[in-house]
Length: 313
Image (cartoon, rainbow, N blue to C red; front, side, top):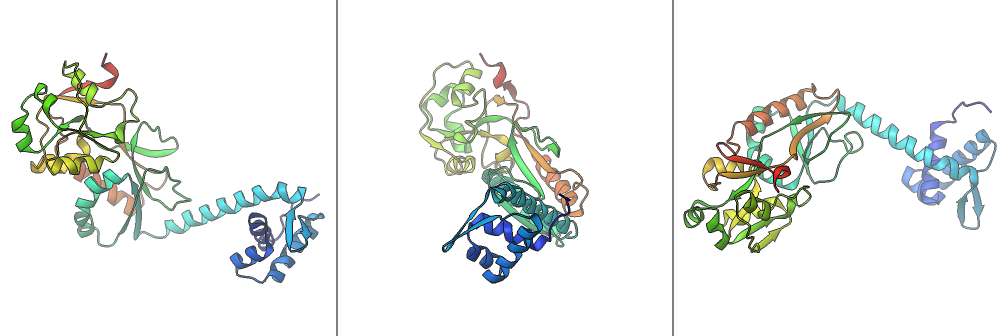
């Protein structure tokens, strides 16, 4: 049997009908009449030489041949659509879509956007705040900023910022709790966003790094790092957080990290884009601006004793 492919319109009609298991729903999706869709599928069956659907009373069902063809057709159209979107985006130097976690978006990107917009009025910047791993082509994303242990194989990935995990609080609270030992009586806020770290990097580990075995129960636990930082800014307590997320507050003096010890981990923030896209004007401009902004602020770990969580007993 020759491998000459049938018309694309016929394959498209079959893929939609197989996915919906309905000629009527597939016709509505493709904006054609059911009769026109049925005609395309009949042409495809003639081309193949075997039926793809059982025509039942007011229903259809895939034949064995249809079940074999269906997943490949769906995957093929998904890949073709993704490739088309990626190729189309190459022609658009005005739009830049960035995905980052909610905390990084809220604390590091959003407060600085005016500066980027003023420097690059020709670029329309869009943000997708979320932790879901995205496909650059399928999801039409240009840049991802991610935190963790990822290896990012096959992508352009650059370490973004040095950081530690340290207690932070308002200056008035710092005056009340001048030593790590005094924190045993302080309202402690738990940032649960880095619970995934292995080994852990929580209050128990920080106290242990300071030579303190006792661990009080935190007063409150937050699933999002930005919420924990907001609570500390409001004076609700002392938060153990990533210094990278608090750079702006540490630089302005709204928060302080007064103690000598900070934890470090193998996890880090990375700037990621697809290979071959790093030189696109909008991506290169955003990367240069972001690295200048982030690396122009104090890291919050200057002069501190850095204790790796991997080295804790």
